[in-house]
Image (spheres, rainbow, N blue to C red):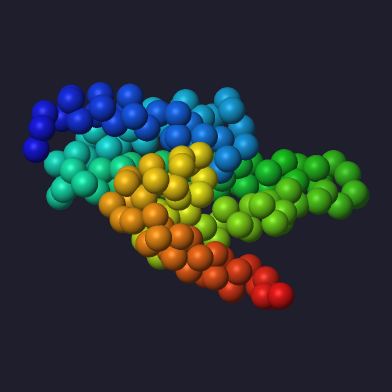
Length: 165
């Protein structure tokens, strides 16, 4: 393997913008994007010795980033629950749950996909890459990428209870 510093420099140079786009689409909050990416890259740096193949680096990084996003969403949910609890004590009004939206359910469903399908959705759909770039990062053909996206969408529809039609 090449030097760790070279690998990470290349990773950041080639993937920072797609990673930022992915985090923003996932969290919808630009103020958290750089923090999530920095935390994720630090985890990857510290656990780099666990990586078995440099070819798996990009999917591995996206998985770490997705897990960090999931942590942020859980943190938001806990904060919202605390605020709702406080509001319930101070008011008799029912506070609508923000995390019951379809978007939040979709994000949660993506995180529950099997690893290959999660990687396909995150890199092939959410990272703002062309089909060719996404296929290259996933080490597959564009045709395989489209098939994987189709299969991942089927999993998501089933998990969300969406009827085909």
